[in-house]
Image (tube, rainbow over all chains, first blue to last red; front, side, top):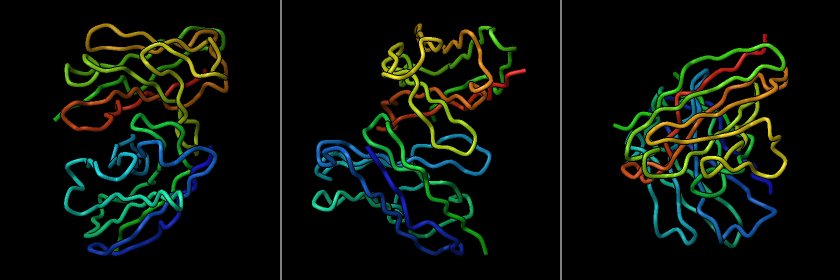
Length: 114
Length: 110
């Protein structure tokens, strides 16, 4: 099982980024997928999850209306579209398999700063 | 808003037993399985315990989990230097529709 995130970087407050997670080594379309973030020096925070066919999506309150989770089962890709980014969204973003996250990718750093 | 609390730090000398506690509520630990993750410095979290007390294959039996009511605990027996890491408990939260993570415990090997 391998999960590889990409798309992180430096963005100004109010800007947008789209994170991707490439999955391999398992039947991607059979699993819920999850995004979790970790602010620098802080703990883990669940961000969003999505069911197998993309019809059910859930978000932590702090990102509702700003972030959108989606997936492309034909390409084994998970996405997180992040709009209206805030300084407090600065974190390493991990994708993980299943609703109880396991395993995790190596993470991608998102820095929101002017 | 749901909160799952852990003691910020724990320590021991090599060979000692170190307990780590995790306190939640009826919407998470009290009604769902508890999971424990180990995060070594600079790496992604790794699942250590699932379904309250089950070890995935490859996890040493020095790690054990238990749960009672709305609290859970992880014990590290025969502490080793390579166990120095951050440990997080987690449980599905019925009000979040997602997992809630504990505040994390930093384990130091003296």
